[in-house]
Image (cartoon, rainbow, N blue to C red; front, side, top):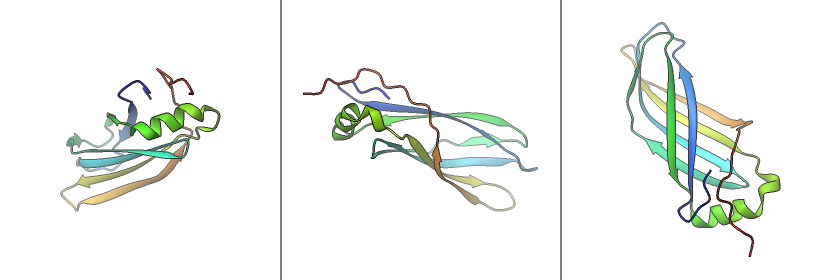
Length: 116
């Protein structure tokens, strides 16, 4: 998470198609929780996944100014986690996947703001 003048967050994920069918990731929404704040991003990227294929996903978006300030002031209690909602297309039927809240996120804070 970059807490500079224009704060941003970046997230990297890896997914695998464990089904015996070709599927297409149609869209995804990611909610990043940090220090009691929530930053959200949506992607309309389409990715074709053959059975057994690993795919790396990258998300980035702006962090609200107030959230960035709050995170800078509460670095001792970040408790970062993510939630991911993905929509897939498949010849059999389309389906959704909701991750629930995934904890244990590794976070790096750069360009910390000074408390005033």
